[in-house]
Image 1: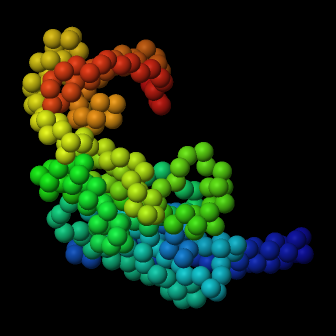
Image 2: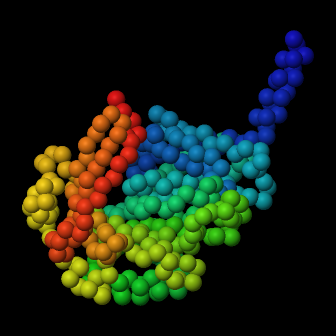
Image 3: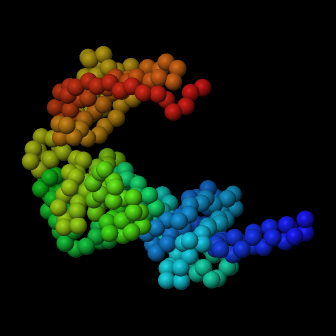
Length: 305
């Protein structure tokens, strides 16, 4: 029994020594208060996430670097991209076992920062960009020319860059070998824009600055009439005439219709039967008030009580 206990202790100690723990506290720099419930990633060499964790009620965290990720040639970071705060990739010294204190700086009022649906790349973490100045100069120039052409000068001046991701495709294949088998196209630049801090649209470009996915806003620069938007109340009147509006039951949304390249109002009416849900949707062109089409979706609710 003593022999078994000794072997177990040595084995457990060996396993513990084969990984590194990073401990610390996340705080709001302005208030000095800890930040509970905040998600953070442990990154290796800035673009490979190797652990994910969440701070406890006191704002403390523990990050793990497993043995197969340890290398004297690599650098390790705590990456945090919390809404309302400046993004941070805090470099840690894995040879220093003292807890670290990471202070987050509140973001100054400015353009809306949002994630417009960048795909997941497994363990590869693309570079997060919250400013156009993060992009190469030639990409910035080609992007500006494209946006002015698509949106026209007036709408372009009202459009704000709201964040994006930059993908190094060679690095992606190195970190995530399975990416070679993706059945979809990986783009180099995933870019998000917002109008008046409300409506968002996304686009993509390749490494040369060629647009590979059009921006999810109408080509107003080619048809100025698409800049006009009927009011929500006007759209409701149209929906009522088409028997597609029920107060407190109908979900109304404003967005982009890529089939007709225009802004649209949608009126969604859903019925529920057990776990099954079916929705009828009325699509109205926001610049003309014309009914574009009706559509129907069906599926199952993710939870049912």
